[in-house]
Structure formats: C-alpha cells, structure tokens
Image (cartoon, rainbow, N blue to C red; front, side, top):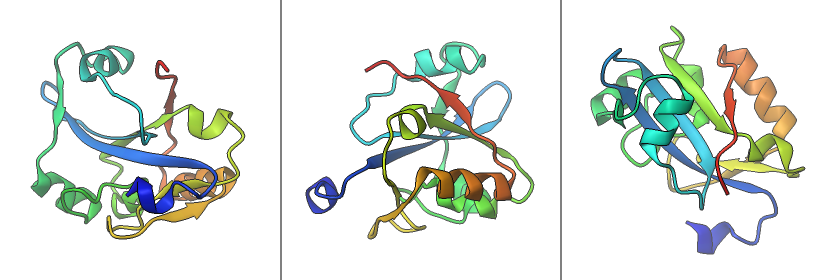
Length: 137
C-alpha cells in the first residue's frame, strides 16, 4: 500500500484486531503504519496481563466490524453498536500535528484521509472513545 500513498502528507495507519484470551475482550489497535507492536508490552499497558493478547479470528472481526481479514479499520467501529470492541490509538495520530490521518474505508483496496478532528468526531459518534497510548519510537 505505502508505495501508492506515501506521497500523501499525514499519518498512515496499520490496524490489529486482537482478543484478550483470559477475559475474551476484543481490541482494535491502530498505530502508525511503520510501527512494530510488541503484544506483550501492549498487554501490560492495557492491564490485560503479559501474554494474553492474541490476534482474533476472522469470524469475530466479521461479526463485530463487518470486515474480513486484512481490512481492519477504525472506520468500521460504527458497526460495533454494542460497544464490544475497545479501540486503542497510537498517540502520534493526535500529537504530531498531522493534516490528515489515513485509514482503509472498509476495504484494503482503498485509503481515505480525514483530519484528526473529523476522526475524533467520528469515533465519539460511534461511542468508541479511544484509549490513547504512547508507543516507543
């Protein structure tokens, strides 16, 4: 994807759909596209216990977010009307003065850019206030 969109100024995303194996909770994690995510470190930050975060199965993603494997996006959170999915956002999307933030619009064959303020408004309207986390650079 990046060769096609790297010329667009702003923050490009990578999304992980995870489950907490103990509590059976679901998490959508959105980070900068080039960020490495250590699931054990993330589990500690989210207080779910080291080793308890795993990638969720595609059936759960389809059920909760109405998208399949490879298409996870925070723009699908409007489908999670029961609020079963907790949303984690890399702080760099909000703190780095980006003009636009980019996400897949329910399919990984396209990318859509919106302002950080528009994104936060969208999230609040879906009932998904993000858990904003600082990841190591």
